[in-house]
Amino acid sequence: MNNIKKYISVLAFTPLLLSSCSESFLDGNNPNQQTNGSFWTNEDNVMNGLVAVYNPIRDHMYGYFGAHNGIFHYSMRADDLYPTRGEEAYLWTIMSFANTPSTKDDSENPWVRLYRGIATANSFLYYAPKVDMDENLKKVMLGEAHFMRGFQYFLLAENYKGAVLRTEPGEIDAVQHPFSSQEDVLNFCIDEFKAAAEVLPVTRPAEENGRITKGAAIAMLGKTYLWLNNYSEAKKQFEIIMTSPYTYDLETKYEDNFQNNTEFNKESIYEIDYAGYGNVSDTWGSQHGTNAFLGNNLANFFGPEFSKGGWYKMQPSANLIKEFVKEVRDAGYDSKFDKRLYATCFFNYADYADVRRDKLFYTGKYDLDGVDKSDKKNEKGEYEPLVDGKDGFSFENMYAASAKKIGTPETMAKWPVINGKPGRFLWKKWSSWWSASGATMYTAAVGARDNNLRVIRFAEVLFLHAEACLQTDDVAGAAKDLARIRKRAGLPEKTTFGSKEETFEELKHQKLLEFAGENLRWYDLIRWYDDNALSAYLIRTKDPGQLPNNFTGKHKYLPIPQSEVEANTALDQRPEWK
Image (cartoon, one colour):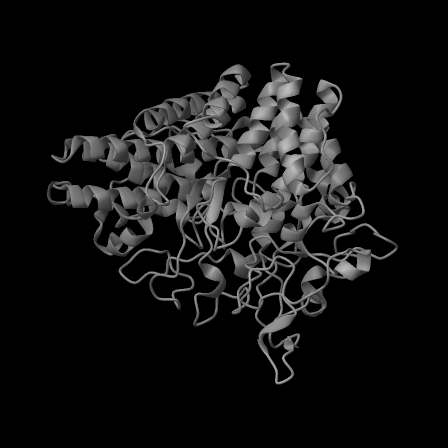
C-alpha cells in the first residue's frame, strides 16, 4: 500500500469527487450516482475511493485546514493571535463577533467543506463493503473512513454546537434531516472512533505515512469523551496511547513539529501529508486532477511580508507575548526565554539582551535561529558572511517590509516593553523560515509549500490527559504531564504546582504557549469558561480594537449557514442565532 498523496493524481477519474452541487449541500447527492455499477468493482477503485475520503480536508486553499478559507483564520477569535487589519471583510466580522448566519454562507465555508468530506465517507462506507477484495485490507480501509467521518463530525460539533447527521449517500437516503445536538453528534463520533480503533494498525510502514492509525482513533476517542465531560473514560483512553505498544513522545526540539525535514516524527499522531507533486503553478487549485499541486500554502498566508515573503494575515497577540515572557530562564542557558517562543515568533534577540545571536532566515538552512555565514570559504579560509536581503533576511528587514501589515501605533498589537525596549514580533510558526524561496506560494520552486500539517500531536494528548486527571482529582498525574511539557520548553523543572485550581491555571498557561496559532485555543476557551466568564476573559486579554465587547454567549459557536437553513425544510437555525 502506498502513501495517500501518491494516489491523488487519479482523482480526476474518481467519480467520488465529481459531485454536482444541489440546492443544499446536505442533500448529499452521491457523486457516484451514474457510475456505481462500474466504479465499485475492484480493490484498486476502492483504494481510489478511500483517497477521495482523505482529500477534502487536505485541500490546501479551500479545505477545513486550507490557507485561504480554512479554520486558521477563524482561530483569531481567541487570545493567542492578532488579526492583520484590512484583510477579508467577512473574516473581520467573525473575529470581531459581528457575524450573522449569512456571513460567508457560500460553498467555501467550513460547514460545506466538512460535509463534502462526510459525503465521500458515507459513499465509501456504503459501497466499499460490497466489493469482492481482501477482507482484512477492506476492514482497515473501512476503519479509516469511519475515522475521517467521525473526525469531520467532531469538527462540526465543536464549531456549530451540533450537526445534521447523515450516514448514507444521498441517493440512498434522500430525506432531509434536522439538526442534532452537540451531545448526540459527539456520541456518534464515539461510535466512529471505536469502529476505527478496533481495526486500524498501531503503526504503519513509511510508505503508508499519512494514513490513520489506531493511536489517532484512540486520541480522538479520548478527546471526544473529554468534550462530553466523561473525564474518567477520557483519561483511560489517553493512558492507552501513553504506554506500550505505542511509542509516542515529545520531540526533543519543539520546532521539529513545524519543519518539513522532521515529518512523521514520534510526536505526530495525525498528520496531513503535503508534498511538491504536480504543477507548482497550480497555486489556487483544489488538489484534484492528474497534475494538481499537492503542497501546502499556509506559509504564504501567515509568513511575514518581504520581497520573498507572504501576506502576513496572522500576528502574535500582545497577550501571547506577555505570557511567553512571564518566566525568564536562568543565566547560563542557551536562550533567555521559553524555547517555544523562538519557533513561534521572529524577533530581534539583541533588543532583549538574549544570549542568542541575530542571524538571517530563509537561507535554505533549518537552523531555528537562522544562519549568518556561507558554507564556502574565501581565499583566506574564512566563511563569508551572508548578505541581508540577498542570501537571507534578518528580522529587521522583514519587520520593516511588514510595516503596513503590522499597522499604525493605534492599530498594531500592543506588545509589552521588554528589557526597556518596545516589543516587536513577527509570526514565525507555519512560515517555513528555512526556505530559500521565502514564504511565497508564487514561485517556480516548491519552496515553502511541502510542509506537512501536524493535526494531532502527542503534546496535546498530555494536556488533555492532564485536564482529565484534574477533573478526576488526580492532581499529581496532571503535574507529571505538565512537567514533561515544561522540561521540553527549557523552563525550570517543577513537580508540583499547588492546588487543583493552581495546577489548572498552569495547564491553561502552558497550553496557550504550546499550541499558539495551532487552532486549539478557541475550543479550549469555550469549554473552560461560561458565557459571562469568557466575555470578561476576552475583554481582559484581547486588544480593544478587535471589539471583544461585542462577544455574547452565542458567539462561542458559529451559526448554521443561512443558505442551509433555507434549503433544508427539516433544519432550524439554533435559537440564539434567530
